[in-house]
Image (cartoon, rainbow, N blue to C red; front, top):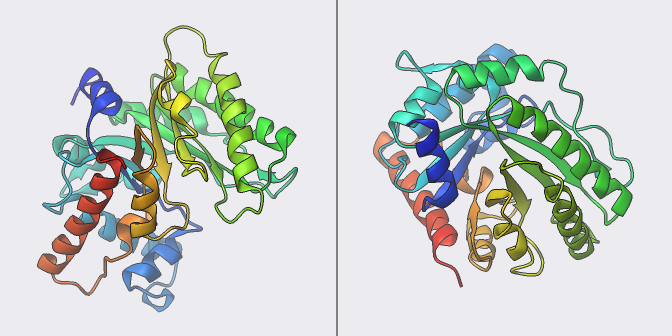
Length: 297
């Protein structure tokens, strides 16, 4: 796929984005869910090797194609890896799946009810490498725990500052200011975030577009104005701790929002499954998430 084809697929393609970007901190949990405990590896290299095998199995499954999975977010090591001798982004594009790369380096401690992103001193080199591998876009995550306007404004400002660097490198940023679904002030945080994102989107110059990855809101349809915003290519949703049936039901309530699920996509997959069992379980998950992304209540 060329850039124009990937842009068109992201703008209007039917389907969802798979989040295959568990990083060092979340990889043990992802492997445990897959049925591989910590006793199966003795260092980071072995751990990352096992998660790469899991992701390769997903990407090469006959269930995982661009017919329903229009994009996939990769961890940096996965982007730099290969499947059957081919760079992973090239394998995805050959299957009709648009590749993205997670660029954040984790979260700072909480202050003003939010967690900002840690510094990214090597961002320029990562963006250049991603562009050279044919990656279409990036993803960066912050977390909002409380309805603190100053904190949420700080999250949005930091996200858009990084997004400008991504756009300048010729990539499309996915901005992810995640509202913690367990927050006691979740509905208020949703509303403040909507207002701050609208403010920041109004400051984008030229014809540049960004994508937004948001927690499913307490009030269905709250983000309709973001779906329709001329500077937003697509709004996608994270599962945020919901199991798949819950996440898909909430997703279906929100017009124009498609999924970008991780745990909700992978929750039924196990290392011990035969290829037939694995493909069937993955296919069922993909069908459920595709339904929630394309058929709205």
